[in-house]
Image 1 (cartoon, rainbow, N blue to C red):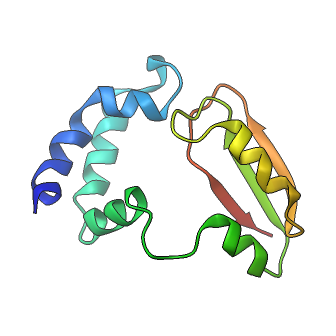
Image 2 (cartoon, rainbow, N blue to C red):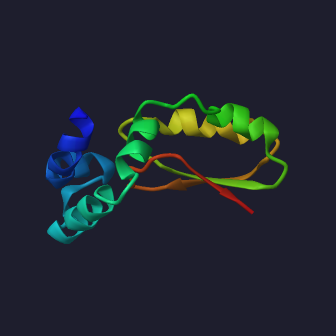
Image 3 (cartoon, rainbow, N blue to C red):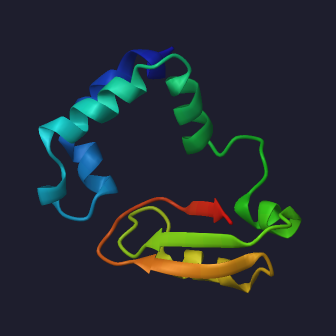
Length: 114
């Protein structure tokens, strides 16, 4: 219940948003409002909590062992939570066809299936 009450407050915080984007010039009031609006959608809090709590689901390493199609991984080199070194370790999986470093971008791990 704490999160349901406070997600809107956190989403309004430019400080939190600054952590996701390298450099404050990329964070506008419009972006903060878009994130806030999406955070208020039904089910959004549950998705957010699953993400930050690393749900009971499979880890990326486990998924990469199971996937049967080519995977592209794009990783921001300024990610404040998961270093580029961690991301580069995923290149060793057979399913990973390409690993792209997104320069000057602080972003979470993204998988794209080809």
